[in-house]
Length: 288
Image 1 (tube, one colour):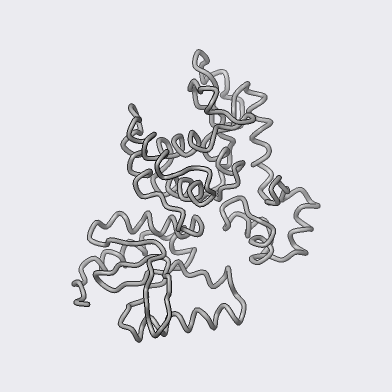
Image 2 (image 1 turned 90 degrees about the horizontal axis):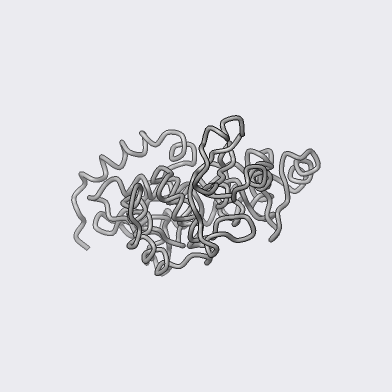
């Protein structure tokens, strides 16, 4: 897979190891040389628009925010934004920015909410949770939790104090955000599962089967369902494939039903995922 496509699938930002595992070192070097991929600080790679958001913010006398800020903090997102997100102070009108290739948000920010021209980690999560679709906002919040830059307690406290448009969405995201989701693929799958109250899913839930401990991507204990974000293309090597087979076989022999979804199904055909989950939600609980 070419480096740009790989980076898009990884959420717009990735470490060298993550990117090379899905592409190759040669392809990554070639993409960097061509300017199709840029190297950020902290040993991460990103699409060119990530750093370009800084220039857009400076040109607009604003700060990088929302999805663009998430990427600059090193957080993978569901879809890298095709336009920079920039927040500018109140007192300005959006018509002044219509010729700019940026999504302009009018808001006043406190000094503690801006770090080096970028909204702070907490403010970035709050902004995304207010304005992005639930699944995209959850990807950002999960990435933030996984990075350690935003804690559950501070996120819940900020959500509880939130008022105005989007505050209900913010509280919903804050309540379910977790550092246990490995990537936006898993976060998006969980977001779809959360549309079905009958299915109580647990990310990376511990399951003991055949003398070993397994952690499927999502566990629905009442129905003994292990729901997997199928990562074959991310780990397409012989040893990883063999481990997957052992895991699936062990879970099945222990009475668990393994449901597997591919990246394309979750990201591009969520209606199929919903059809499957609709069926699963009708299955009776299993007596353990």
